[in-house]
Length: 600
Image (cartoon, rainbow, N blue to C red; front, side):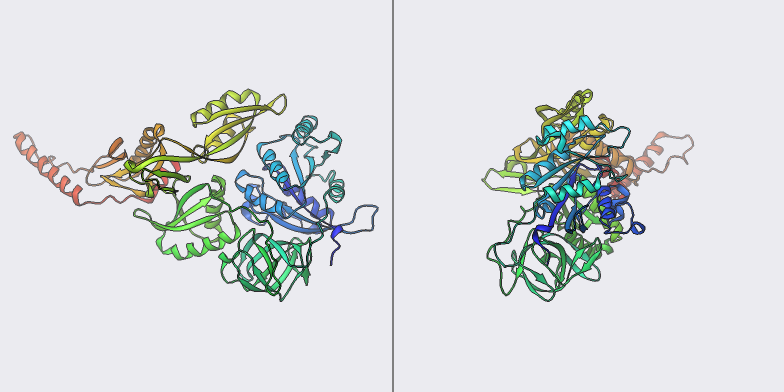
């Protein structure tokens, strides 16, 4: 059993691409957790997707054994590598709840970014000891003095307490580990012997089944124990218990302060809830640990298998992926145009993109995703209030008293010379300027209030574009506010296509309807009859395009002669086309949906 005062639980927090995973690699090397010959870049990033994109998507725990120079005492350092992108802040918050300290990593070339500020606030909310570190100090573009000043202003710490490292070349790594031992407090002594294990992650393994990641706060857990999940009262027998080094390594037991995993007789993936407390069934704890707030998805999209026969496999894949990502939600739905599928909820657009790519790669399911939307609150004249995330459930406009949409506080870090471009971009997206804060002589933080719906599609990409890659965005949800929103329907030959409906602001409806109609005109193949494509709000058509009919030249055989002969043939053809239009159905090809969804 490890001594409590020789355990340190800490995580690494930073903006995306500031060197978290590379720093974790150096920690593994310096502590000889992974031998040099077995090292690969981003060792803790297990997914191919993480390595390809150079981002961390999942939190990764690892146990490090480290003896400081000049000391004979060995310390256990439990490191949790966290993601840096705004869409994965839920992963970060779960990791912080299992730690006592955090290493705040700031890139010496890029400086403090929007997500750096957000992660600092998260760490302070959890009362963590923050160790500020400037990384990549050996880069030619490094501006250590300016970045140091930014950190001093952000945290209010003396400049001499900020460490300087280079994770790539190994500069300052042992000093940082010594600082972790010195500054991060050890786990608190448990008040009782009752088992309390906090679940901070879980995943599905094809051989072991459900693997639960957690940290022991009090009591001891060992193989063969009968455990209980406190949120749902379900009981299971522990089959294996172990630590991460960084591969899973079975051990006999885990005691207070230790981080590890367990596998049990868990048959149903949905039984495991991240943030839940595990206790012993024969001697349960009275109160669960203060867990996590329920994670509410902010962006919704319909996922449909392109081949209907893949539906069953797709449903199983979603259940397993949900276990691996607690912030992902889904429920069944069907569409007249696309068949059976699922309505899925995400924390942001990158989160949606990653989930779609993981489903296609890891589970071999070809998917079609509908246009992302957000959740709206609708108040009817009868006084009833409900939420919708799908345009299909939009009530009759005559019954609506008020519609509210989610708003966010958006923080944009930008170079001083691009302030005008960013403000124009935000105002185009119905943003309201709130405050401006100077970071240093060359960069500022702009604070806007904006509808979430305007951010989720391409706002981040546009910021990167107008600031030549130097801008960064972070946002936090502030609640719902009334807006002038309407449902935009797309009609093909008078029939509404549910998969192409959307909820949009009245000012944007005409422009959006025109774009969709033009895209569909290009994508729908010509039929034997003319196909009318209309964008409508209620009964009012606001945009129209027509796919012209394929026509046979019926008067080609008439050489000269009376015009009435030609007219008779043309009228006969016209009557046939009209009859065909009444009984004919337009089959909208898959590429037409893809063209519209990509146009968004």
